Length: 385
Ligand SMILES: Nc1nc2c(c(=O)[nH]1)N[C@H]1C(S)=C(S)[C@@H](COP(=O)(O)O)O[C@H]1N2
Ligand SMILES: [Mo]
Image (cartoon, rainbow, N blue to C red; front, side):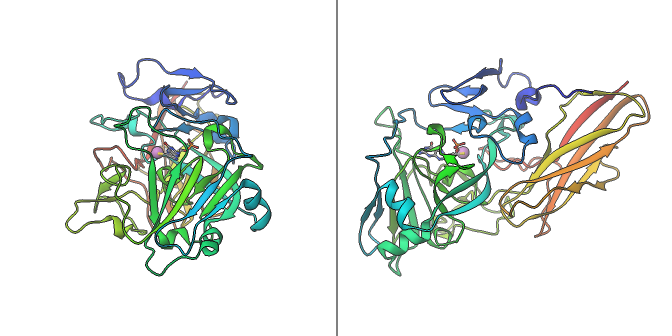
């Protein structure tokens, strides 16, 4: 059988989006357009058959429509803030020449990936399964920059500002913060390369933040400012935006400085364990007695995938799939498995991953008003002729 081009949106509930339009932003292959202003484009699932998502097919997510073309030669990154010893403006050359270059393979996934599958529907970009990608990011450790400006003991959060801004004054500028301890981790980077090339404009040229394991919202693009703070950053994009009910998800890496006393919500942080089939789509056809190769990916917040199990009887029995090469704990893990349905009719195939912490996927949606962290076990029906 020949898998058709998979559009993640194939499986969106009817009425979510009337038409799935493929459209190419400059420098990108055609992606699934969700909104044009600001640009929100998702990656067709067929690209996830590769270990790393090509730069020209990587999804694009923006909150604000005023996105400048940054000139690399005059670009400066100001690092300082009230809880830093001093402020330094770094050029791109400074970053490349004066700091160790490090690389990390990591999944960037929007908190709202699969929001379009929420029942009942919730407001926001109605993403299918393609608001994510896996890449090799390289640049400098954020820690090395912070050590250069001197971090005060009082620093509890590090705040980030990108060059993009609102078109209307009333829309809040996009700013995010992460806990100081997360900022000081070895794998938290200011990256200027993606898969061995300069960052594409739409993915944050000339430099962006990489927060491996945490959802895309913290991965600030077109970075221009980094500030060490002695108090919690109070901006719209930290609260009320990008938060989840406090006890809904099994969060290990909590962001406690953003949890005011009695607050019913907490910032979304690490990605939940998740998996998908990438080489077949719902409704694919096959012949009785003929083996079919299933192929896909599994990922989590950086603890590491230990098992991917497949069911081809609607969830009654499960068999472990073969895991592909371990490309690092923040990368997704490829897997493969073969099934051979014997009887004509339909077969329900399901995939479920488990990580080192023993966390696994849910059978039914952990509903939240923003449609975040959808890791419902994926179910495909194959037609056996
Ligand atoms: N400057 C800036 N950075 C940003 C955003 C934004 O709107 N502006 N969106 C964030 C969100 S919510 C996500 S999911 C990721 C998406 O990264 P990508 O567009 O490279 O795929 O970027 C993050 N960084
Ligand atoms: Mo996002």
